[in-house]
Amino acid sequence: MSGTGLEGRGVVVTGAASGIGRATALKFAQEGAKVLVADVDRAGAEETVAEIGATGGAAVAVVGDLSDQGVVDTVVERAVDAFGGVDVLVNNAGIMDRMSALGETDDAEWERVIRINLTAPFLLTRAVLPHMLAAGRGSIVFTASEASLRGSTAGAAYTASKHGVVGLVKSLAVMYRGQGIRANAIAPGPTMTSIRVDAAQEAHGPAVVGQLSAATMGRYGSAEEQAAAIVFLASDAASFVNGAVLPVDDAWAAV
Image (tube, rainbow, N blue to C red; front, top):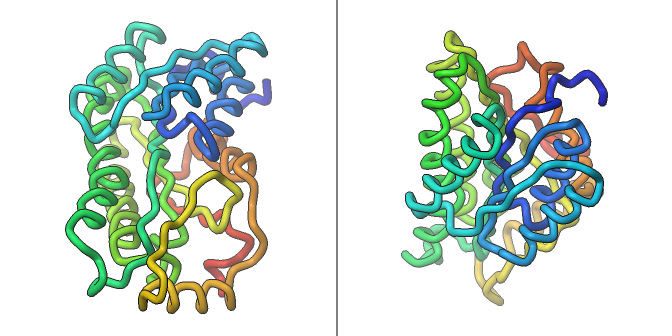
């Protein structure tokens, strides 16, 4: 262990069936934490749990749509039953939009992206807060995005959802800092994961975003690089970091 203070802690990681979420769950397990893997992808979630178990770690899975209050309640109940509480929550699950400009965004695209990217982490955070408050401590880390820092990396729905995530982080940090709760976020730049963008051909939004992104972004990062930043923010090593949004993006935010 590396002295992060995570050994024995109960951790919930959403979107942990693949990509950044899986890398994060594995990293927490390496630090000695007990991990609840939450995802809509049953096979992927079970693979993550099996990989943690193969190295001697402790993990359980809950499968379901985290914008469903019933699934959220199950996640929290299972974590409390299995681990005795929730010390760390990682709100990582999310989806991309179609890079649509606002005028091209239909109701279905807007509502789906906001529901998964913003409403789901709101519901889960609200559900774990009573347990963290009772314990007098807790760390919540959100996966925001480069799109939470600017308007030129995604479509209207995704950009709005990730700006909303940053608002949640800052509100949480201010409201609960006196009660032992910390809230932070990473803002990943381009990262090698399985997420794909179903951009509409010849649409205005993708053309604008593609041109600007190609001119300013750096290299692609790995899921493990993003996971390392998440685990740092959750750990005791970041005990005085609260309300921060950390770009993990090879200086893209600095351009």
